[in-house]
Image (spheres, protein in one colour):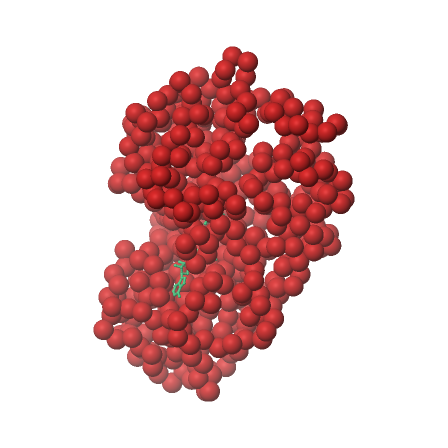
Length: 506
Ligand SMILES: Cc1cc2nc3c(=O)[nH]c(=O)nc-3n(C[C@H](O)[C@H](O)[C@H](O)COP(=O)(O)OP(=O)(O)OC[C@H]3O[C@@H](n4cnc5c(N)ncnc54)[C@H](O)[C@@H]3O)c2cc1C
């Protein structure tokens, strides 16, 4: 989209002269490091206030963790390697608003939303090798009767005759309802338990035996997620209790690409990994980045910089960056990101839509390494080849890391063969696959804080250091979501411009 050699030097450098003495609250030129949603959103906000921006992005594309992997240019032959679905809830409203904003600039249907299906009754439930008496696999239509006992778990009374949802709902609902009624009040309520992991809360407050926790975690989450902070798991449950969802027609990457188009290609340098930056005694900031462009303009002075980066990317800067307070450095070093792994698999047909109990969207659940098999909500009912994906988080994601791509595909096909038994020969159907290992990326996956980390680190992480500002989903209260990246960008620009009245773009 934008070539590596598109140097910003000519456009930006001339207009930079004499910017050194600009006060913190009236920047004229801002460098943004990272072209994910947080960096792009901060860029649009600043431009809307007349501030010139330049985005440095290490990758050859914008979007960061919003990445649509396309096997080819044919319709629907893609999967979402990163973000794939947005809850239609007031908290996620800013995502719809930014879509309206880009459409108002680029044409009414530039970025179109389509419904995302979270549950489909045909989705398989396959754990402990348990099947119906007729040998077929359980599906979500059975969920209300899938007790621990029926699924082969040996739990004590009274838990054994209960379903995972039946167990969890009464525990989380009061918190979820409080958050939905008034997010700030609800957030303050759940923060009272921030020092606990969700597992500890279930042990101490709900008095669940460990094997009951394991059962519910297996069915409704991924391995060891309940060892994360109580706050994170409750917030995640709040989002997943949303009934209506949407995704973006023809791929989520249409959103960051549209945002970048409005910002302007001359204001974005791709393949520009920032190696470090220096703060001048006069208050300006210079950026040092890798680029094949002839000039690496170390002498260009920006008024401020926004590091719209996951913490690991800040820590892995190769040359210089300032050292901040021990607490800030501890926060950057320690906040927890969970590993995420996705494997897109392309088949000759959308066979999952034509089996006896079809899946139109949603996901199957299994205790096999694939854990979740996600069916596309785009192109449902169409003929010809189709793409589904397997999706693993936390410890389940780690299973896939040491494997070669060939082994990953073999393992996933073996799992799918168990889900589809004799109905479909998945090996005959298979065309190609693509593994996306977020653990080998700076972000690792998504921010999911450990017990106590919201309390200890949230504020200090987001606080600016002289002319250096920070953005990214991990700095908001909505970790793991696009809206978190947007939210953090709004907060950082408000802080930089000293303008709390600044609102979301719409
Ligand atoms: C597998 C997966 C599934 C997800 N599912 C959903 C979902 O369904 N719905 C949802 O709303 N959200 C989802 N998310 C979360 C969402 O994608 C993120 O919260 C959001 O995109 C993060 O944006 P960001 O700008 O904070 O960070 P990023 O997108 O990580 O952006 C950071 C950018 O900085 C760049 N960079 C790193 N180091 C440097 C450097 N030194 N110099 C220059 N550039 C650098 C990176 O290349 C990247 O482009 C998912 C994420 C993943 C990984």
